[in-house]
Length: 132
View 1 (tube, rainbow, N blue to C red):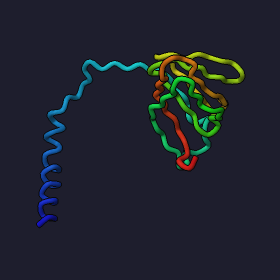
View 2 (view 1 turned 45 degrees about the horizontal axis):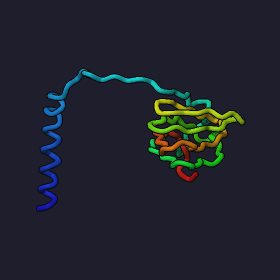
View 3 (view 1 turned 45 degrees about the vertical axis):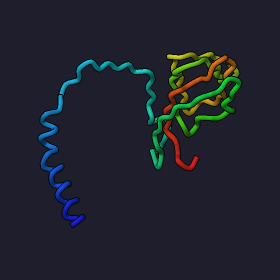
């Protein structure tokens, strides 16, 4: 009986899904987009292998540090949502604040610190190997 009911639900959804799609809007209304950063992936990898793309919210507390690390196998793009942070890349310090975008391709090694009075919040997207 349980299987028969499950089959009925699946059949109903299958039959109804074209009708639901027919009622769905086909044009975008009120949608705006702004490209923040873009990175070609071909120079980063010979093959994609088992890589994953992920998006995370990172927070860096007052006095916090993101230790020195390399992006040789993990390209990333970060968007600062709140706060102010300092990145040190190739011995050069750059301050980023809310609304700034930071790209790190395979040539980048850097570290970050939060000398400000508030927590830094960053939307981070990267492509990585799950075993890293």
